[in-house]
Length: 269
Image 1 (cartoon, helix red, strand yellow):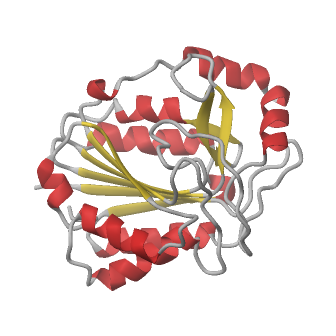
Image 2: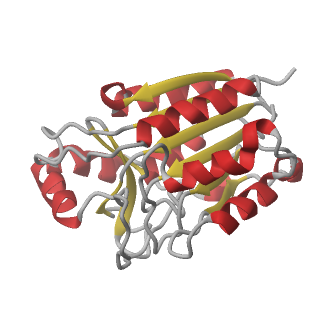
């Protein structure tokens, strides 16, 4: 019998003591995490939430590692993140743009290389679904590129460049140790099947909203209380069709390609 575990991370604020006085205020990121929690719970997964001050680097890494230790072949792990995306200098030269992409957790950034290492700890053919509603999320599994900000009434979910630079230099020893020591994991070395549906492309912004982020709000609309009956590709495409042209959700895979995973209804154990 297969098992499903999910983790839902949402931050309307981060700790300004770490982020050089910036609190990263958002309106709906924690609502996004609550709604994703309810969606996965309705499908029989065992969900947990990490919101705001609970969403630390240590807590997120521990929760992912715990899932990796428990899940076996064909089991499902769903992780959703709603918050700011950030960037750090690429010290191991594995990024085309010279920047590592990050999730801005409460007490510090979680680097895409760290996530790749975590995916590599899952057993063969475990299904991993990543839902990332943040900027720089087109391939938070890897890569992002520079872009211009279009006009919008909503807050873009990215750490401003000046804040990113100051935060790095104020915590340089901490981040350099991570960036120097984390190994570069090749996709072929990841034995799980990791699927990303993200809030935007690499050259776009993900936007906050009143009750949900724009991406999570459209995801909920297509999910329609569980009435959606298509596969992952159709799910992504229908969400994309509802989004404005300046925010186009991405669909991306690393690790093992499992056709039956692609063909399933989203969140199905």
